[in-house]
Length: 435
Image (cartoon, rainbow, N blue to C red; front, side, top):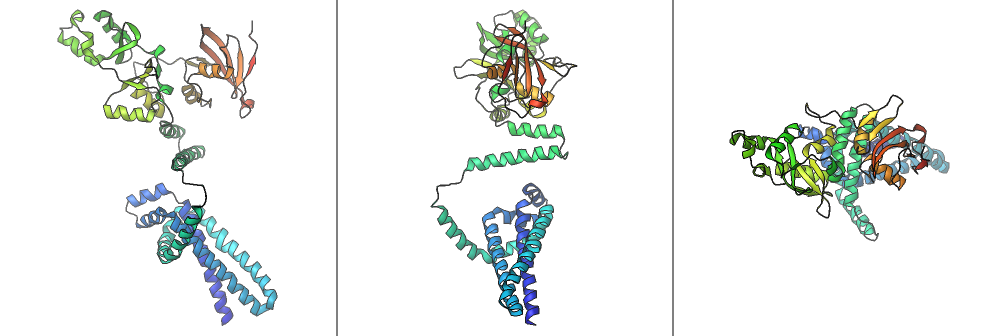
């Protein structure tokens, strides 16, 4: 009877060890987002899971304490039983037997199952786990007190910024993984990634450069200004005076037409500046995420971007920010985009002013945009010189051939992906000028 009771006790202890291991694995692997959604829907089990996970140190402490206790007790009882049956050599038999039993049935099997069905197992094991946490709280608090005071002797400290970054990267990694597995559509993954990128981008990265801005001269006759606005594809156009960089207002086509109707449709009687709104200037270092919030707060859709010297560098609109999330937005008035031209031989001809991010999104490439915004800027940065037409560079797994240049501005580049070069050293190589 003693032997039978000892065997039953050992089996119960191994079962408890399996419980602790399964609970730890399932609770740490359970989807916090799914549990939160289930709790919002009124699921009591999910509420318990979230309550347990809200204090992870208590859960881990209870698991370690309980698991260590039952494993040591099981080993001691197995050794005692083996000594009674086989003498002193029974200790060796008990060690081998209990190790195999604990590894297979108390560790590997429950952990594997809990990992495969983390959410389901967590919902089942969370209630008894919460009860054990309450029972063992005095012991876990004593352990936490000892550990906390030992850690005070070390130079380490909690890094909140690192924790925030880790959460950010975890979300991005989950999106990329689900996209590779086909669970999330590629377009949806790009939109979710675009939202995460808003905090990393500055308005200077996505603004319309001043060389591409459509503007009107306040000193031009009203009829000429109206003609320019009617031919423009934009409803909001900056207006300048004396010099193009001196922006003094923003004209909205709707406001201008309303003012024109009040003059009996006589352009010569129209005061253009009375219809112009005050320009809104923002620093080029403003994050895109902050700028989006400001657009929503001020109920405005366009801002002018200035550098540290107060010089206008370009403009940014609400549509520019939305395009970073959902991709290119076009309407019936937009001109066809011919800045990226895919050739039949696999090469791509692009204008030098094309943004690297737009090219990457359009062709699913991975050119870096940390040091430059445009393709021409990337070539100049890597070459450390202003190249001449005919020069060929190879870096980042792509071949760049300079096609045209206007003064110091690269206007056209031919790019060809080099599959074999991907993943290798990105040190640029240059070929001699042809001809």
